Image (cartoon, rainbow, N blue to C red; front, side, top):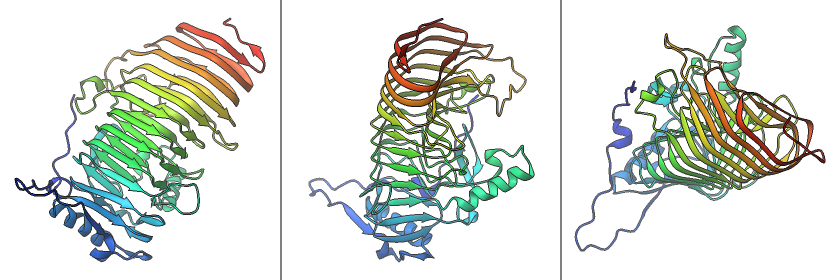
Length: 433
């Protein structure tokens, strides 16, 4: 069943670049500093109105780039418009407000559906050829940063969870950092994303997206702070990113529930390329997530996983199998992976945290054609592969491994054509039993 789509929001869709007059010279790109619209980068003055005014002025002038200069600019929810890009200069910080009412409730996409919830700090819908750029995303020092001021939101979540252990993620409203929807030809590069109250970068129903040279980081204890959520998107490349968060580093998402395949608002996630990235803290480097229906053609190449010591154990690949959702995960390939730390190589298993069949019979799911090849380094465990009663697992292959593990056992059951080819663990060839 198709879910209701959000109605058009004037703040995100009422301006398009004006056509040039016939024979006129191309107009030079419009660049407007937010300071020229009254924003103050003193780290104390709230600048939401001034920042939005800069966006609106550039949109009204036919498009261009809004520039955030060096300084710390405090803001609530902002809404980019078609034709308007955002650039952060070196040492520029766009910092989200800690007041939840600075993110006014509206219809938005969250956890596989549309509902009244809080928008992100930066929102863009229908913004083809969008660019969000910076001049550096180093782990420390001079960088262009978008910060979520997440700590008070995290504390409120844990307070509520202690009071009521059944508290769910959406029971405690928290803004995301960046939300881009229904846009084609999107590039996000050279920025540091820090301490989001919820997900950092949420891409929904976008096509032809490049996320490059981006650093995403939160500390332990920051709940639901996914690094990059690729939701119902196609043709997405994530390159040279460093992600260390207290949830999934990259999550591939769609819809959920027994009628998920009827949801026309959630097309399959297809043609995803993740390369030359480093993953630190996290539930998994790459997850087919808590709400994912059809995910196919995923390549993860030349990546490094540095699983930290501490309360979390990162997985290289995690496929969550929801017994209440018809899921297809196919053609997923990892190649040239370096491991260095504490974690699990693979976790394919049922996931029932929010299980709800809604009165329907259990649907069938399939995992097929998954390979991990050319994997080396040190990690904690090999991992687990197990389906639920309605899941078919087939053609899963591990090849060319040379790894050192504390536990070299691969706990696998119910897999058709599970292949281990030249898999060396702790100096010994592993054979299928």
